[in-house]
Image (cartoon, rainbow, N blue to C red; front, side, top):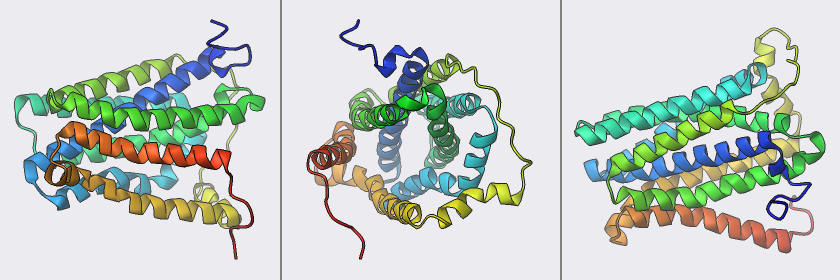
Length: 286
């Protein structure tokens, strides 16, 4: 056991271990679901526009709810928020499974389920990010952030590939596995224990709701980094069209789509490893 978890290992902290495993399960479920939904929608409609709308349905809730999610995560029990969000995603995945098994699934129903999942994921992401600092000692936070990033990257790589392979057995099977992983995440979040005293917050006002935006505007470096990341997110939406490349250009099945979606994460991981070995030098501004 000591070889697997050295004395200073974060995973000897049960709370962090539950958090880390729950995050992997939830992110992997989301990535698998993205593969299943993308392939199923394209099989039903043969429409590139519908694939784009699926991507929009996933992304739009996070934009609309950006102020609300942060405010809620700052004021309420983040474990409860994460559990509720994961439970909503579990129910949506189960509904997709039932619809696929019974044959009444339509692209409209899929759009609705994806929109609900996108909204729940927006709350989950805000709560999970804020929760990390509460589950580890302050001196372990940098290591916890790195481990959390590793968890996310692992799930983003493994999830799509696994989802594509499972889809061979049918879309319902993918959704059932996703619902099971979300259920596992809910259980793990329920096992997280913290004895921190509740923090007193000032009453909710427009000032407190927009406090985050005011802070970002006062920090040019942070504003620039967030703006750059937003551009990457917008351009990264092209991955929603990967079912077209997988089926019509590469002539593969859903397993090929899974590998294509995993490839972007593999490339990101490879570049991160390269930059960790050969960091950039000099100033990046003019």
